[in-house]
Image 1 (cartoon, rainbow, N blue to C red):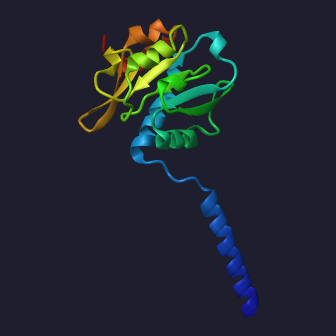
Image 2: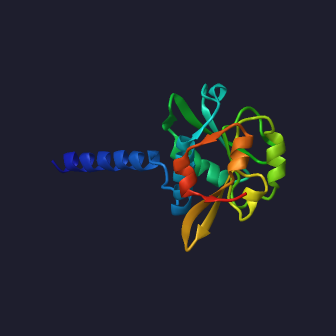
Image 3: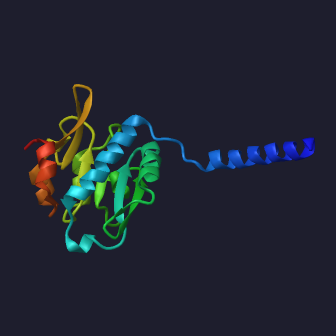
Length: 177
């Protein structure tokens, strides 16, 4: 009887270890908030018909850890009929293919103009995370006000890329020119 109990406990231990190993690590709070924002941006911005086929590609430039976290967050999610796909690029020059959204994290050391020149003529939403970048070419820029995550929006930069933004999203943004 003792052997049976020991065998059951040992089996339970191995099964529990496998479950723990298969569970992805939780996202840190800041990353989770930004991932939720990015996810919601995609629901309130409309891309041209040609961009509604294949996967919905989100590019992260210059931060591999953030890429891993966003990849975990977006796995299994869909937008209409498109599966989300998160890609990592070390620098803007490495960008290849069609990206629906490019996210430049706070530690991005390049310039927004590098990115905008790379996606010129494409319908790509550029989201940044440094003060002032919405005035330098980004469509949306994360900011903190009173310790709360907010975002700036430059509507002309969105429209320049043939994207349409919902008035609901505009009403939540701090609009800049």
